[in-house]
Amino acid sequence: MSFNSSASDEDPYKLAKMAALDLLSRREHTAVEIVRKLSRRATLKEVNFEQLCSELIKEGWLSHQRFAESFIRAKRAKGDGPIKITHALRQRGLKSSEYQAILAEYDDWGELAYTILSRKVEAWPTEPKLRAKYQRFLQQRGFDFAAINFAINQLRQDTQESLNNH
Image (cartoon, rainbow, N blue to C red):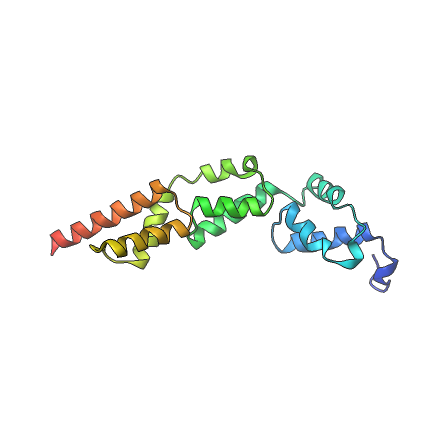
């Protein structure tokens, strides 16, 4: 494409592909995200987005596997649990078969929940209202019952050890 030709002279499919590649050069996307972003553009309404996404996948530009790996890594670093991550991946159009193996590679969700909880509270509280508050906090972050119990038991154990050492 030459820089001095007007956009109206260009093939909409070619413009859509260039726009998709521009998006993909910045970060990984899913096909659903690409379609959502490109279909907003009036000049690209006529484009067969399914064909475009298939072509981008065949050429290796678009990969749900890469997206899932990158997304899960970023969300874990932010402190999100597997339930919240799974929900977000589904919203972005991924099937469970495209991310379950990657999610399963991480078997330390309890440790992550403990790390998040220990940043928020130094010792496990004795008041039931506060204990419930911290459990809800971890649930909202997307941790399951097992991870929450691990974090609570670990914090409880740490609290007990610090009391015994003083």
